[in-house]
Length: 293
Image (tube, rainbow, N blue to C red; front, side, top):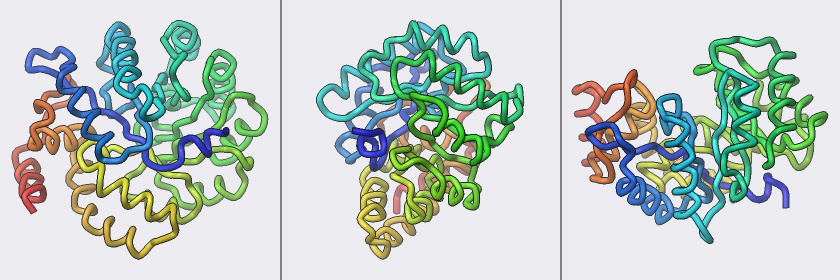
């Protein structure tokens, strides 16, 4: 079965819960995973950007991978995020991280270095050769500073064995439509932008790897399922009620917004690791008012 079939629906890019002293809060992580599974998510993504992975040690990352496997066992697939801007180090990590139980590896494009399209191609080609699991590209130029063009993605999909999908978060609908037109038949394309998931699924994407599914899994997964079933009237009704949440959760920083919401829900403490800080008081108060509705 291809990833396009296995990962249809809603994946959740899990936050990493912290205690007041900055340590990973595994009791809170268990509550979060139970919450999203009960809310209907189709798979879990651990060590994504939403998990504040740039601030996690390798020991913490490995422990979180094992923890996620344990909580997801027999329930849903797990994707592990392994990305960065040092290709050689990532190749090493792909050979040493516990990936035997992962359905796939999600790898964000290199940040800061700003490689050319050929550099991006060679980076991902090297990772694909080293990865023991199928590789999902992650195009998020708002964070990386460099867009992965549709033509480069298609070239990777066609020429590099083991690259089987992409999480597309450029916000460029023309790029998305080109990608969906030209992709190989079994190549997975999912949205990386909650606010655009509805129109992108309408264009042909298989679903979304979501942030808001941490806090609002049931209405969001219901919206995605309605889209995939072609019931866009129902999907629009659900999505309309989430539009304000998209604005508030992403208004200052991700995951500051979703962590604030989840702290109000008593799932986690509202703690982030520097350089990230909690939502400003004004936005937090607006979020509280939204949740009260």
